[in-house]
Length: 104
Image 1 (tube, rainbow, N blue to C red):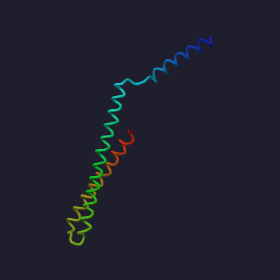
Image 2: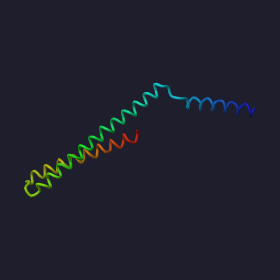
Image 3: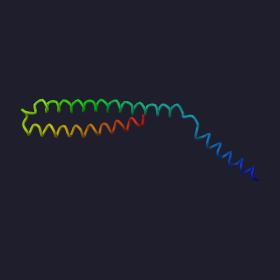
Image 4: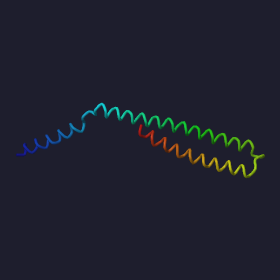
């Protein structure tokens, strides 16, 4: 009786294990590959956006520093507000890049 029970358990686990480790269909492989490529393209686009934001921050910072003595307080405040906005956008884009890169 014990051997029949052992055989029954063995057959149950063997059939479940083989079905869970079956090879994916070509369509599933293609879909997975397309998803990876889409994520890679998204990362590339986000990285370009990050570089653009970094360059814009550098340009505005340089302009403010170069014209520090000749710039009015109002213009400086506007530039600082723009910089704060750009830094916020940059942090968001960097988080998005990290999220996608973790999945590639």
